Length: 76
Image (cartoon, rainbow, N blue to C red; front, side, top):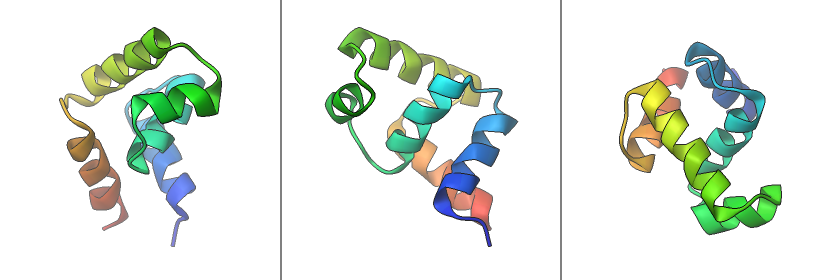
């Protein structure tokens, strides 16, 4: 079985996420919010929001819950 990180990496590859988007994706998949991601990755709030927007667009989703569901569904 894949680790949570490996699953996130596979999902990120599937949707063509950039390396930085994968970092943001991983934290979103863990349920973290934009403020936490900003502090953890040492990037601005607007940069976090831009990454989240691009991740959602690439995945064809519009919420963090759908992102989390996609990771959970990938494991099945």
